[in-house]
Image (cartoon, rainbow, N blue to C red; front, side, top):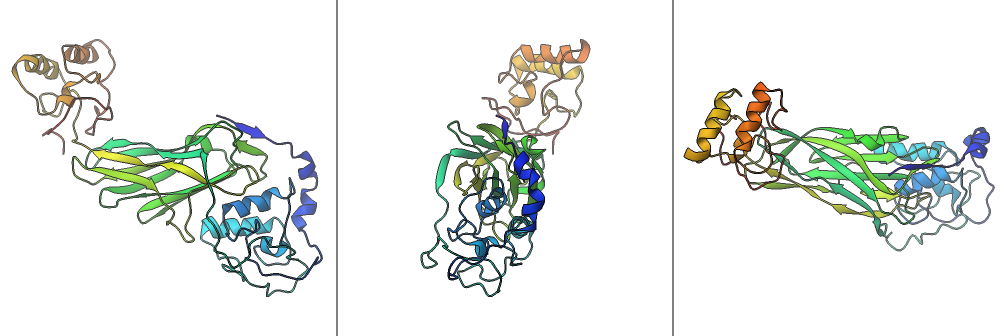
Length: 365
């Protein structure tokens, strides 16, 4: 995992010049186009925004300057990708006509549309799937009323793949989970742009690694976001958290933009939350406190009882209940040993997958 950097000294030297804009004279007769579709594929998406940014530092073909003039001010400049960014991810106004369908430019200016690539008759195609980029949502476990944290990861597979930007939406079942918070992941703390928005039934995010496109994500694994959910469902239920492309206005799709674009569709792996019984580890006598009575009762119970919550008796959380558990708890209470793993200081679900069960635990709500 890492980032790469481009030398943009020549670009920064002429930044003032290009920020004024590009005002070419018409090269041929005007043709129909969709404003904002700088890539000419019929879609106005994240890839167009990135292409508008990178065209100044690594010029590629521009087939229709009018399409790249997102704000219709008669100048193709740095204000155009900013305008498109505000529309796509900040809820601002859409580009002026012709948008969202093809049409002629109603504004007289010096820009040309020499060779718009989309034929305006065929419905635009979705971006192709690329298995070199994989979004995944971590599985989790939680008890009713408990708040849990779920991470979203992006894997960039080895093989020359790099990332300039990405976006995605994550949905859940409101009957089983309530979204209580979302934050950028630990690996996107210093990116050029990160936007997180909550919606009914989910949340969305958009990330640009660098506005100047001098920095890219290299192959590796990146935690791109973390969300918190309060568990509402019943014990035994399993509820999914998945990537969806219907949240926001306009809807924010799950996409990645490699270096210079255009954007592509990544592979996705959904996550799930298993709803389990809430308990407190090591409170084996169910009195709500952890004291010497618990290891004593645990020793007795090893031979004389059948607990309703085996997980509570697994003080060292090794997935089994045996003599090592009361010894572990005695070491914690009297010899400065490590505290039992969560849930210990408060009630919660067992975050560890093992063969032990917890059918009921009366001292937790």
